[in-house]
Image 1 (tube, rainbow, N blue to C red):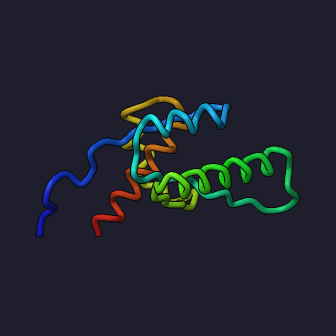
Image 2 (image 1 turned 90 degrees about the vertical axis):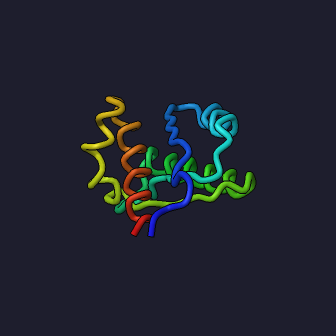
Length: 110
């Protein structure tokens, strides 16, 4: 049984350091769904780990507020798609983000 219509209209990635600026970019993208990598940490919470958890929480709640469906993926979920994703961008964080989306789409088709 095939799909009716396109499974995915488009895939967009973004990365950066300014969290509020990134949120504004996401809002302009007019997305209905987002895939984000979960934070899986162990041991003592470093300054970077705490910041990462805050950023993840910010995006989860802002997406909920904007009625954007969020898929939270385990870090290892992207591994089977990294090679394919690297064909489209060379920036490490964008490769990782795109690999998460590709991996999610592959799992969704099952």
